[in-house]
Image 1 (tube, rainbow, N blue to C red):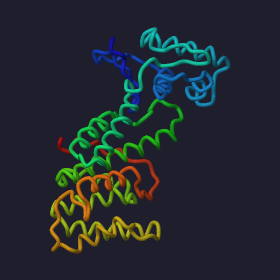
Image 2 (cartoon, rainbow, N blue to C red):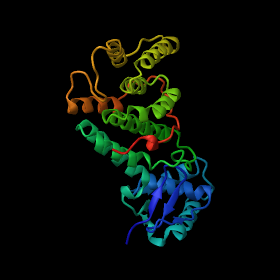
Image 3 (cartoon, one colour):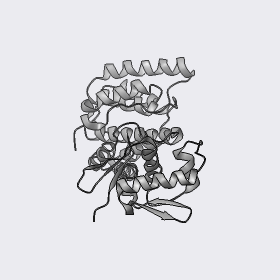
Image 4 (tube, rainbow, N blue to C red):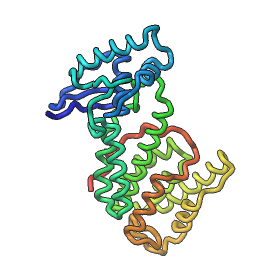
Amino acid sequence: MDPVRYRILGTAQAFRPDGSPVAVGGARLRALLTVLALRAGRTVPVRTLVDEVWDGDPPADASGALQALVGRLRRALGADAIASVEGGYRLTVTPDDVDLHRFERLTGEGTRALADGDPAKAAGVLDDALALWHGPVLADLPDGTARTARLETRRLDALRARHTAALALGHAEQSLPELTALCDTHPLDEPLQSLRLRALRDAGRTAEALAAFEDVRQLLADRLGADPGPELRSLYGELLRPEERHEPGAGRGLGAAGRANSAAGRASSPRTLDGGAPGTASGPGALPNP
């Protein structure tokens, strides 16, 4: 029998094997589902469940209240959906039955494909990963600030990798609208700014790329008292040498695999200076499939 699938990249939801939604009503019930789904297939101690569902302000009979809440969730999902284990409870699923864990797996696969010099595969896998987001992550967790920030950062990593793959495939023009929106939201994120400048160059808009570099340089100086990093400076040097023909997606002095490895490394370890949570720019729907 196929398992129930769970969504926590947005409002917590459950879906039967035929795709129909399961009614999970009530903020506490959705919070409980979120806490269990975060640790899919693992036992969550009663104390952890109480702390996270009631956000550090539990009722007088916390164990009894949790037991009643678990009973309600079982009635919604099925008696076997939540196992009682000594000291806690477990959502009886594999990690891949929860969208968050599928997102993490697919993002890792896509980033590795990019590093291996296969941008077409990377683009497809990363599209699948990004399509799993359906709103603010962990929306039903009373206090998920730290986790939310980490996951939003992970989503931004996936977006950088997806656009890196798009440029390698010659899809610069299609990438530009979302890259521009992302740069507007994260103006001090140098890897994103580099991707936007490369997209402008690859689209034949070198003058705009030079103007954009100057805007970024001025912004870094005004906000941080800093100069652009080596990647942006190197790109600026390339923009000043229009006599050197450039093929879209190509890196200077790198073979296909080397370019992808370099790009994947930047996507996963960016020189990001703003430190803010990523914005809610749309996913890669505007990007063409490979």
